[in-house]
Amino acid sequence: MRMLTTKNHFFGNIVGHVDGIKDVRSLGSWIGAQFDQQLDWKEVDWIKKRWGGKLIIKGILDAEDALLAAKTGADAIIVSNHGGRQLDGASSTINILPEIVDKAGKLVEVHIDGGIRSGQDVVKAMCLGAKGTYIGRAFLYGLGALGKEGVTKALEIIKTEADMTMALCGRRDVHDLNRDNIYTQK
Image (cartoon, rainbow, N blue to C red; front, side):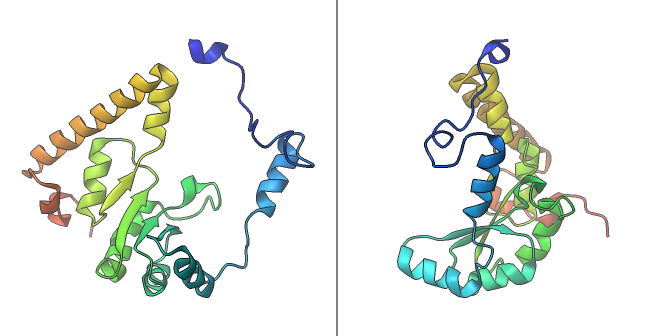
């Protein structure tokens, strides 16, 4: 109920503070102009060298791109379709994950986001070879419902679900999870 009575939040750190940004339409145009559509793998290598730290590349949905990311020296990749916002016909991340792990998983650490809503989803992704998962929506729902306590509660629920799922798979350690722990159609 508290959420329903709060004022709408609206990019207050940009709107009114950046020249030409006065409303949602101008904000969208400005955001679009911030992304370089010409980025290529040589530039990723250049970024890695200048950065000097760990480099994680997000948005990989193709095994060949995963191999290219590994060759540029990426420390990890995140299999992600950005929530389907950029390309609504893109493969779901969980469907493409096994192919990417098979082709590039020995060269680069593979993580996944998108569609991870429960502890069972975390376990499934790890069975398919992900070394890590990213969860957003469940935490946002918890935050919206109960604030900080809601985020903690969401994390507790996901952990309990993951523990239960692993127990039902006969596993105690995430490192023992593999594709034999899930049913897949052949």
